[in-house]
Structures are given as C-alpha cells and as structure tokens.
Image (cartoon, rainbow, N blue to C red; front, side):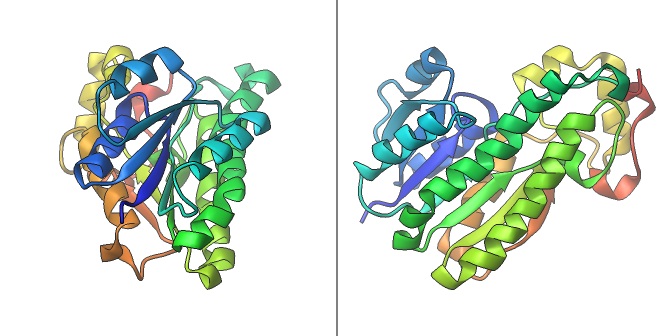
Length: 249
C-alpha cells in the first residue's frame, strides 16, 4: 500500500528536497505551497506528486487541503509542517503587522494544519514533523518574531506528542541551522558566510537534502519509538554560543 505524505512549503528549499526523498521512496506526496506557479513547475511530470496551491495561515485554505488529501485515502502517514516566512530586524523596528505576518504562517499554520489533519493521521498512526529553526533554540539579534515563532513551534510539537501519542501519532521537530539555499546565498554577505563557517564546528552550511533526510527518517518506521523530540541539524552550531557579531547590524 502506497503511503501518503503532505509537505507544506514544498515548492522550493527544504520542502522540495524532502518531497523528492519521499517520492523516491515510493510515497505519494501532496505538495502544498502558496506559490502556485512555482509549484506547478517543480511538480510537472513527477509521478506521485500532487500539487496543492494553498496558504497554511488561512483556515479556508486548510479546509481545502483536508478535502484534497481525503481524495487519496482515509489515512495520512506523514505531515511535514515546513512552510514558513522570515522577517529580520531590530525589536524597535518590528511592527505588529510584521510580527503577525511571521506568526500566522510559522505558528498558526502549524497549528491549523496539524489540528485539521489529526483525524487522518489517526487512521494511519502517522507522524508529524514540524520544522522550527536553530533560531528557536538559541537567541540572536534581529530575530524577535522569527525566533519566537520557532521556539513556540518546538513547544507545540511537545504538546502534540503528549496528547496524540495515545492514537499512535508521533510528533517531532527539526531545527535546521544555516542551510545553503538560494535565498540564503543571495542575502548573506561574505562577512556573514565567513562568520557562520567560523562558528559552526563542521565549518560549513548544511544542504537542503541533509535536512530532508532527517525529516524522512522521522516519518519512517525506523523512528517508530521516537516522539516529542527536538532535533537540531546544524553542524554543531547550537554548541558554540549565542549570536554572531556579523548579524548584529
């Protein structure tokens, strides 16, 4: 029987890399993203990929996602809550509108998707993997909304594990460190890149695929007794201290 996964924020980056790993393992994957054009491009001609244009922060879109997923069977074996937005700036310059923009996707979206799909996860005794960030584990400057949203996602994950475990649903959280995405390489100055390399024990950024492999593992039977865990995939970055001088302006 083909397993079904739903990955949010699947049009690019970690979400796309993770979706490809599921597909390569024979899963069917509902790939959800609010960027309909990019989603259509990356899923074209890929067997097992089901594109779904939706915004996880909008309850009506979440209801649409549930209806779409239900077309492919009663159960959902994996929900990967990867969709997220970033907003970096000083606390004094972070307006409430900017704060809410981050929270409604990074935190509200995880809550809405997980709650709406819990009945289908029960059917399959499925797994939830929420994507937080190293910014939720260690404070840094310019990340008041982003870091706080990711810290909340980590606690939400543990709430899910505690309450949903009796149904056989596992919930875990992955916290990526610096990842070599196209966006990161476009916005990180040479000074910031050098500072990250200096602060990370493995002396490099991670790749989207490396994060995807961890997510895929946590959704697999190989992780059948793993739940309620917060796992950093960060090259050791969490172990080295708080903040980088290059990111303080």
